[in-house]
Length: 180
Image (cartoon, rainbow, N blue to C red; front, side, top):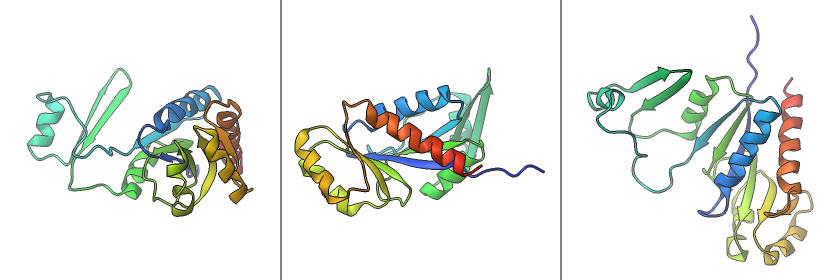
């Protein structure tokens, strides 16, 4: 029996409108080109439940009391599951069932996984001390660059510098090789 390898997990963290989704999309695209399978977990930080199509059979199943429903068609699988709350660990467990090489978590800043931190401006700098396991920092303006001197082990990249995503992709590829 083949051993299933644990996926590499990376978080993309920062405040709203810091570029998390844009960076995650770039990572997904580049990692797919490199042959890696990627599953994402997105924190819905806008309050309430994420929108789902009402009146469709799957929604009606959930409304009738199903804990989860799966809809498949043309190779696409949609999963809708309902309970009071889902911990990040439960979400990772569900995502891991798809046997990805990499799981990208967008949000969940306080989780302990390796993370890339996006800083909009110097007002966000407190995140450097509050968050753990930061592997890289992406910043929007030069006033944040001066913070780089605080931890020479963590590389800082301008959000406009293509070297940042390239570094992050190489970092993830190296983590994939280590788990082999």
